Length: 148
Image 1: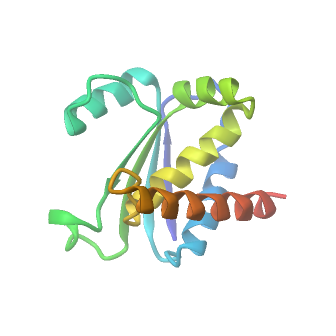
Image 2 (image 1 turned 45 degrees about the vertical axis):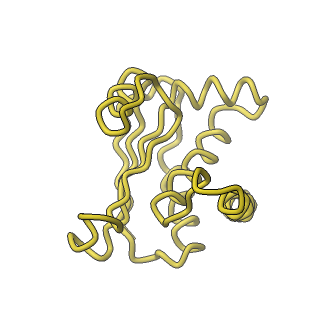
């Protein structure tokens, strides 16, 4: 397992060791122990730029996933899962609004992004959204146990 983390926005004191351990727990539970994963921690400005460039959405968002096991990239490397970009600014805002804090919201977004890399898609149908939500809930429970 190879988890690369690029923290370009450390204003919120995000614990990179915890993020790495969280990613490892997720990958192990998804039977992706050999996977390579890249995580970019960005600000709202950077994620808005990526969102506009790659998804044609002119606004910041909380998480974007760039899968490498689908489409034209599938033959690049069988272990290269993809990239997850998370806005620390948005994670902090959403965590405060939900009363769960930045770290917990960041974990939720990391789970969400990695599930997208593994083929889960909540926008496809209501059934797929429920399947993704159920999987996310079980992963978050495992993460809580694994981080203790």
